[in-house]
Length: 69
Image 1 (spheres, rainbow, N blue to C red):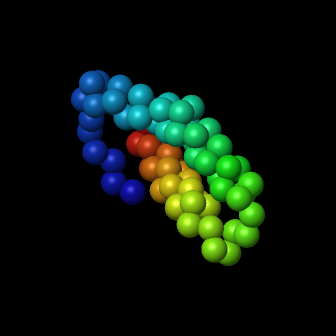
Image 2 (tube, helix red, strand yellow):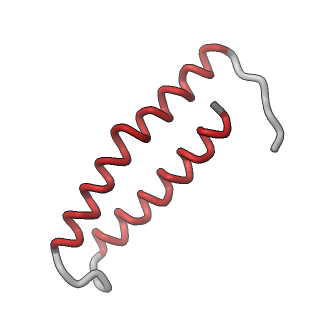
């Protein structure tokens, strides 16, 4: 993976985004998944599918940010 130089301000933004994704977005998504599971049948539950998709995207972003920070 190629590394690109980043300014101190850019690094702080990346670090803040990483912390936000871990401490705010991740718990919110987990709560959404729990609520969707409570609705019953997961095979036809669009809320569950959307929450799982959001979780996947957030975890991917966290992984990319962790390699950058």
